[in-house]
Length: 267
Image 1: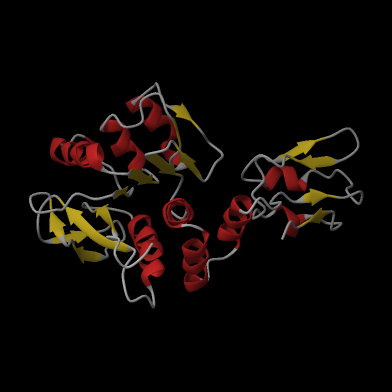
Image 2: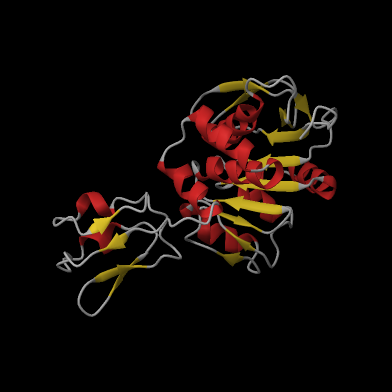
């Protein structure tokens, strides 16, 4: 990006009982790209249905920059998750705002249970999508045509991106920065935030480097690693366990629990 290009507008939806990290995480990622620059790559703002304070699920109180009547069109829409009550999921004003903004946005991006709102707006029909693991059934209840992915941190459908639970919103936001602004902006945001192993795996995948851990011949096939892998990436072989390189992200607890040191890090 050069100084003559307009910054991308990032509109982050707020509502009562929103999950703080779902919106603060992406907010920080896009803002970090601007750090130390004489011009902004991203113009990040928040929006809620009505003017006034918004109380998050943990009690944090924030005030949105805009309401639905004066909010500018966003290039990137962020739909965070939270305590999505039946009343909130049935709020036609919020659903209508999402649909209207989505028509002219480059990317609509849900985080955690925010995918339920995206599904209510009809944005995920027939698409591969993810959400918080506690919302898998509810997502399919809202739209049975969704192809549910239970293992990936985020799913890219082009203009629609869904992230898994809470912290996955940071990984997906970093990916969007890479997608729009390139690897230099991506690495800058990671460095500014000192984001740990989670971003290392994303970073290495984008660079075409290995991410999956390896199990060496020390393996005694005790099975501890398979039981704790959150990605179901540890598979049983004839003589020892092996790791599925397609699903392993290299950041799970398996290595620390191996009693014989048979699991090697990819980093």
